[in-house]
Image 1 (tube, rainbow, N blue to C red):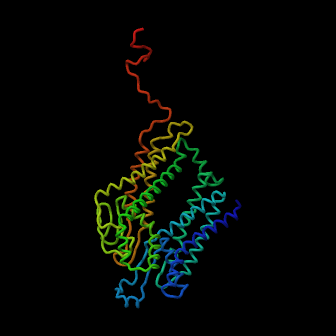
Image 2: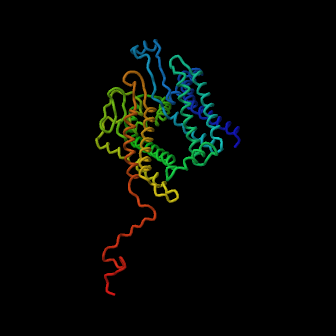
Image 3: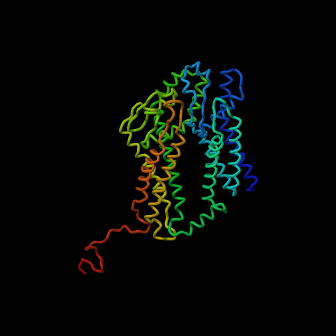
Length: 426
């Protein structure tokens, strides 16, 4: 495909990804504003939507409450300024996945570098426009964060999607040159990057699925508590819809919290409050219905959940080893060094991925004790790295019969024909 056409399609993809993300915030806010205030203030709706979209891409919001509001509500003036930085990762997930799709299409078109650069530049320009036009007096963001953070999500997604397809299908360029150089190495080492990346992807996908399943089970079990919190909020129909949309956007964040719970470290909910399999201590939380999933107590039996990340690592180890084949009959295709390197790399990739998710799913929900909520990145990375590495090592390092090896038992002394003689009379 012609490079100009690839550039145009990549630019269109980035505009659609950004515009749809902002529209998810603009549409319900517009309806809410008309119903509540009776007149539409486009400036206020745009500023609020821009702030929500930026928060969804991990941009911290610095909120300053006006003096009149403090006087009317009786809030301590010391709490007039605070940060909100716990992101609804639904925005970031959409941007990342849409960007990965765009990068993959550019790679299949034979001009992935052009598509990646064009898409990233257009998305960065859009993020810059949102940051400049969406500035507000009550909610402030750092300009460089408002530009860099959303662009980083798109850039990582579009580059990852493009490289994945170029690596598997070829690109007649830098990726093919790199693979040619790797192929000159002996044994199965040229397969190492692909196998390690595959193992890491399988682990992270499996962990996400396990966490999502755990969250779904808890939503069912704790459903009455969630309904009770919804009823206590006394929301009208429109308010319930807006609250529901907001909670849906926070579902990816809650999935990361579920992963931290399953892995063992748990989730911190402000100063002195934690939810973990080994013990739970809750303080006063906001009356948000979805927070009803948090249990008031836990059982030590829940520590057995750590076997699920071990199983995810074992599944990745099995999937990787099943694709590891001798190259030209060389004996070192499954060398111990290669298998150990694969085990360690899968564990490290899982730990780094878990740490990144924990960073993205942590932040501030408001002033005071809610200044820091979410999983601890270091603790989650350590737990996931050990659990996944253990599971991967079990399947990767276990002895395996090679193709062509005989399993016939060794004949004993009474076996006819051994060493050319028989115990039977002639």
